[in-house]
Amino acid sequence: MNIRQLLDDRITAALHTLGAPDTVTAIVKPSARPEFGDYQANGVMAAAKQLKTNPRELATRLLETLDLSDLADKLEVAGPGFINIHLKNTWLSETVGRASARQPTPNTQTIVVDYSGPNLAKEMHVGHLRSTIIGDAVARVLEFQGYTVIRQNHVGDWGTQFGMLIAHMVSIAEQNGGVSDVAPQLADLETFYREAKQRFDAEPAFADAARDYVVKLQAGDAECHGLWQQFIDISLHHCEEVYERLGVSLTRADVMPESAYNADLANIVSELQAQGLLVENQGAQCAFLDEFKNKDGSITPIIVQKTGGGYLYATTDLAALRYRSGVLNIDRALYFTDARQALHFQQVFMLARKAGFVREGVALEHMPFGNMQGEDGKPFKTRTGGTVKLVDLLVEAEERAFTLVTAKNPALGEAERHDIARTVGIGAVKYADLSKNRNSDYIFNWETMLSFEGNTAPYLQYAYARIKSVFRKAGETPPNLPLSGKELKISLHEVAERTLAMKLLQFTEATDSVAKEGLPNHLCTYLYELAGNFMSFYEACPILKDGVAEDVRLSRLQLANLTAQTLQTGLGLLGIGVLERM
Ligand code: ARG
Image (cartoon, rainbow, N blue to C red; front, top):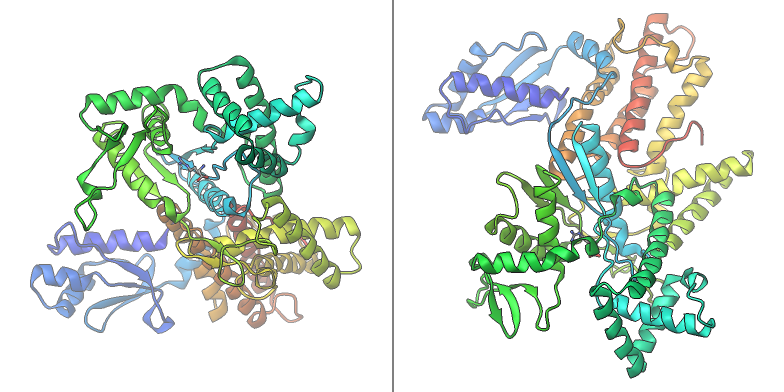
């Protein structure tokens, strides 16, 4: 249940009964301060303007028509015409008990989430981290909400670089005496790529061979294709190792590579041509759309075919979009790439719509993100200025977490400390990223992300483990408690109990907003506040102390249990694990 939405719907309906036009809504928000109630409706002022009436008067009339007595015990007009809503304790306590049985309602929409998409010529590096983990979190949330989610890992497996790589494979095979297995050399793709590039730049004969191979590959030459396939398989295997270590839900089945659209690219160009959307410009096929006019009057073109016939990134994305709309029959597509690709997506979306490659009503959304930066505010690099391999970063995260865990819990066995370190270390890296608004750049800092205080994964994981320890001490396993759906007696006498219950009920508001805006930081903020509310509750409301009445103890255990479940579910949606003890 989304309380905010529920209130918004009901108050909006009441406003309409009073004659407010359809465009007017209640604009319900959680109240900023407890004295303003739990929620506040701010839409009356705009409604009054439309109706040319006094807002306070309209607010008073609204309260006469509006019946929220089932869930609220006080509604009041404040300031120029705000409505403060105080929810009933009895309603809250009944609802919070039922809310634990959260069944996602089925949603009929099919949504493509396009994320990760590394270039397979090299190993994954830190530049791929944000797309991979932000996209994954959003895909999980959408799935949790009952949408049909189709993950699309649009990997770069085509293009001129592969000619160079094939040329290098061939020459190594020749050195091996004609044996074409170059797997050992491909174990380190980074080195392999570097060597190939060096030869490409230094040896004209090698560069010529590389160019020949691209042409052959694209023409479907069997031998070239075999070598290319071998390379791609190994490279994808590297990616899968990273996904596995990161706890990212992508599999081989989600890979829809650029090469898959190759056969369709000529059709894309000829259809655009037939529709009169292209002009030839210095031998290239370009679309000049007025929407992309610059200040000086020039237009930034969308190039779909280069001089000489080669196709581009945009051409492939047009084909992908047509496939997603026409074959996958999607209602919405979300693209997670860095902000520098913003213009690319605007142009592709616009041209695809004009060409009719996308069905009417399909929502296309680029979900951009900023850079991950080092302490110095510059793009994140190794000490020597090289790109950081993603796998190395993750290994370091686990090592650092292992040191921390060992310092905190020297008595635990080594294997358990390793398990904990993995969950904490990877969780910390992911959470540090997910908890920031993706639109801005963020500074990567090991100390803050691994801290047990503040808005971090370790803090939330610790809050969860702490609740579990309460249950262990109580000699109670959560399933023994009255379960959801059954009659639950949750009493909300203390402020801290009520605040915690209220927060528990706002989980859906957080996930709804992630689903809508593709901003996982909304869920992080929610979980952080929930953990904070729990800590205050735990201090103010003893559970295990002598003298706590049995019904109060059970009610508090229930609240603690719901908190643990919500933390686990929420972190799970972010792709982060919890620990029974740490
Ligand atoms: N391979 C691209 C890159 O590394 C990302 C692909 C994003 N998805 C897309 N449909 N263009 O920048």
